[in-house]
Amino acid sequence: MRDIVFTRASGWIPNVIREDGELKLMLGAGADANHSPREFTFPIGEAHLAVIREDLGRHLLLWSAVLPLCDAAGTRGLLDEDAAVALLDPVLLAAPADVDALFGRVPWDRGRLIAHGADIELLERGQVCAAMRTATETSDGKRAQEHHANRRRAERGVVLGPLDTALLKYTGQYVHGATIPKRLPDAVDPALLPEVMRVLATAEQACAGMRIGRDPRRGKRATDKRGWSRMETAVDAAVRRAHPDLASDAVRTVSFLMCSEAADRSRNAPLEDDEEATGGPGEDTGKRKTVLSFTDDKGVEKKWRAGSGRTASAEFWDFVGDRSAGDNEVFTIEDEELGEGIQLHFYADTAARVMTVRQGRGGSDPEYRVEYTLIDGMSGYRTLVSAYVRGGWAGLDRHGSWLSDAAELERARRRRDGRPDA
Image (cartoon, rainbow, N blue to C red; front, side, top):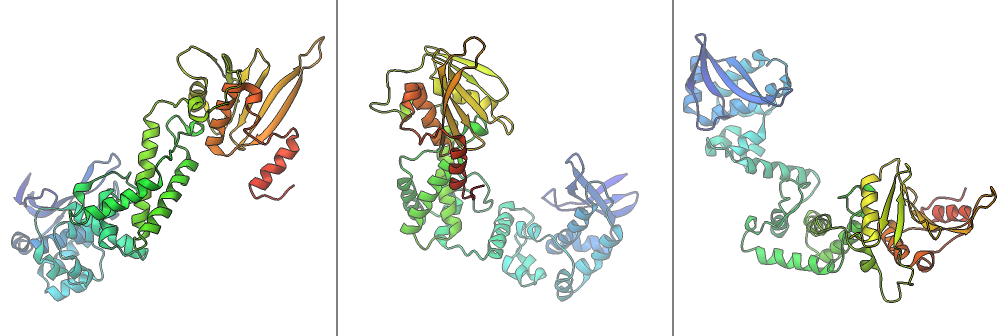
């Protein structure tokens, strides 16, 4: 038989119950293996109940001191009742100076007290009883999160000014730096909002015209890391130049916002028409492809025909997004009628173009002309595919330093990657 003897407005603050005639403190804390809250109880006396009823601060201090014991119990362990009971008199009945001294020796949950209105400056000075004079039954979790974030920044030696803080709050990253940034003007002090908008205008101007395309090599919605890095570098440099007093955290949140928005635009748009995006006057040599075969390193093939409703480039990169994997990084586009094609080696940032010079006859093997080139990341691959679709073998002439010797290509790779020649 269990009866509730005393409870507060916040359901999470420990309740006092009477169970089988015995007074107990009951609290929910931690979680079990199924992520459901665990419930703990331990016995208390009438004197403890009297203090809990009358003194919110002492009640919260006891909760703060018991929570580490609940954490220690884990997902299925038992609460150390002896340790919990041993906290009752020192926390609830001792003089304030003795309580302060106790909290200098035992673990306690600082965030819980801050969420319930404790004076942060007094807590930092070890005056926990005095800090609880401002305590409230209602909880403000955001206050505790912001304090924890500031402590982490202080450990890194980061000091934020008013504008730094405003920028982090505008992007929603003041509390959680890993949160995807967004635009939250209402989170900023109205007096600082014009300054925030000036910083953002600097960033937007710095990355105007830049884009972060998708990288199908890493999945259908993955974005190009090099494109991200280029935009991040451009925004960082411009913001630091125009606003030299900003902290690094503030500059980083602005560039993160710009890059995230650009990446979202790319992810949510249809696969772009790469022929139109990368082509230009004189690009089309009159050999635009009408039928192509796409294959991967696993032998899977897909046909594309002009008039199918999608461009060859978009269809190919869709194929790559579906099939690319750590053990599937070689993709081919082939014009079987002309006996030519290109092969993309994603694992090495290289490509090859292949042309059939002589068909095999009378049991002899066909003869091929093969030339290789280095590729500069995803943008380089997009340009190469587009050029081949528009102009075939000849359309690739100005899109690479083509080498006929595979050994020479390997030496060029080593130089590019900063590795010594074998």
